[in-house]
Length: 422
Image (cartoon, rainbow, N blue to C red):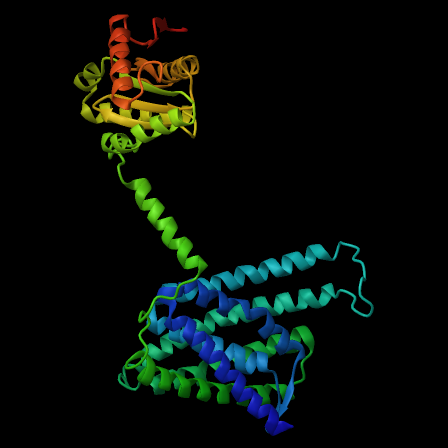
């Protein structure tokens, strides 16, 4: 049985290494988060096995959780450092530490519940959960020191054996796993009363694991990473990859045609989208209303306070327009201090009320540096009552904007009416 367990010990180490090194190797395609998540999700099982699960090997009783999986985790952290950097290495350690503290906190809260025993012979053991939680916190604190130590020792050994990468890898693992065994066994003995004779068997198992992982690291380093399978040889497609590509593509489309100053869509985007919005509304038997919005006396703002302040006022106005318009509407910067809003599914009467709300919002919330209110004039035209094409409706709206300026500005002009509710 001892030799059978030893065979399983080696198989488990090889399987763990193959899976984790594959995730690390393909991190550019899968994303580094896949590797880090797989590295972290094993932490509870490692700790649980170290607490309760032991098998007999020729040199004593050992736990696969501590000797295989935790040892593999530390060696993987060193490999992560070799292929990324120290800043990346600290991310899973910090995440584990905070997650373990949360485990302890939740276990403490759970003890105030009155749980039901729904399955016979399986009562919940909150005290055990708390003990495991504290052991995980202790183990993660040691892991932090282990990770720092294995990286620093690996780099220090480089002063003497720069080209002997595998030997540095193995020595670093042997030394830090010895340190880890001393520290972690103290926690096992304190929290769970694990007997002292387990210490030496566990140490020997970790030394064996370090040698196994170093051998596999050598095979990977010289026959796979340097001369073999390329990490980006082929695309690994899955649902998440498709979604990521689509999100990035949509984000690119969203950014295209944005006005650099105000962040709203620009005139070129309007010339592409606005005609389609108008025609689609008419095809569905709906109205489509166009609003042309012009900032009153904007030249005076630039002359009196400078163009930078004028730009800031345009940005504020664009923001007010975006937040006041509905999600189905689109706002474009038409040029200079003029904006165009396209409002599909909006009748002329509804658009007049919307335009007045825009005018009032700006007049009451936008000011120059000397607290003078900034106002806008708005011309409103609607398809199909004022025309069936964007060009025609836009021309009519522009004429009504001119009427608004003639009427003293700070007002809305629609079909045969002037609106100024203030």
